[in-house]
Length: 177
Image 1 (cartoon, rainbow, N blue to C red):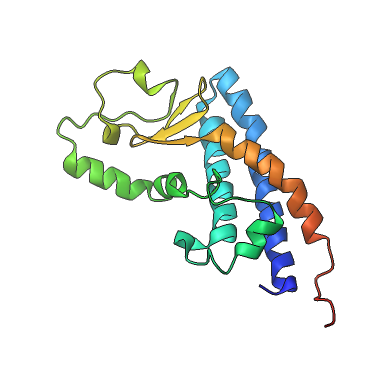
Image 2 (cartoon, rainbow, N blue to C red):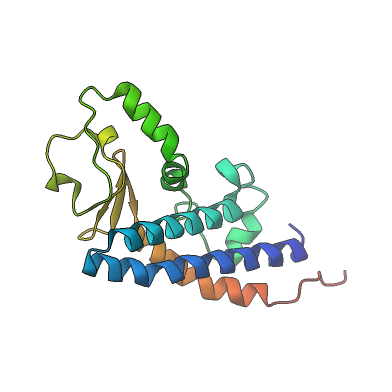
């Protein structure tokens, strides 16, 4: 990856990190107040921003993982980073498809959505009957049984944001050979 392209990707990562960090305080306030609307809009913003970081670091479906090794190295991001998985963003982005699948396959048509609390707080639901669930005791966002730890993502974003800003500000040209 040439240096100018690297700097542009670092700037994109920094911008998306900022988006994740801006979404975090409203999530905390919404959990404290029980404000469903603010919580779910803010979580969607966080999930989208973290997926955009992932796409910058690895490419869609990790298609550019090798080509973007220099970017990840410059930000000290490991392959097991909580940012690497975009499945939760996919659930949110393709919510319509999840509803269609649920409608076609759910025997009882139970539907649990927008719960603030542990998934175990409500009995009798299968994984595919649980849509958006946020457990404030674990910081887990749960959708169809998949867990996405919001705090782990925020911690990683807080760590790489200053690195991305610092790296993006470096010269964008390659040194003469």
